[in-house]
Length: 156
Image (tube, rainbow, N blue to C red):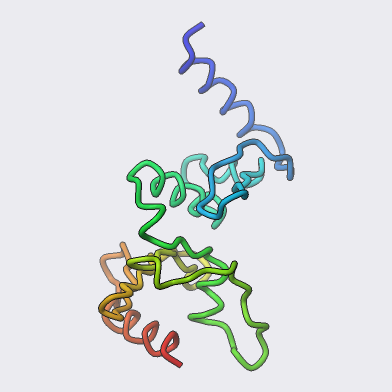
């Protein structure tokens, strides 16, 4: 049987099953000795017309970083930490825990944040220039204001 046909068949079977927390994929991580796990529930969001979960976007980001060989030059910050840094109430939110990272070893930081509970924006911090970009694929976006707000939040 053709591999692609078999893979499509298996994927469709997984999509039809009720969501579980069973790990269905293990992806490489930028953090040495760790892997990213994709659970069945998250895999199901790849069906047409569904919202992507943070775990899926995080996995795609890490796969892209390995594919384009930027793992050693761009730090990939997880979406939860980025969201807390940009939108969390610092008085009531515990400080997000980062692995021991020397940010001077990287040209920049790449992540994404969940906006308005239904939309994802990419976050890029260019270390050398100290510039923050919050990029929104939506045509009705306010990228300049969002980037300015992100820079102010990260500066304090």
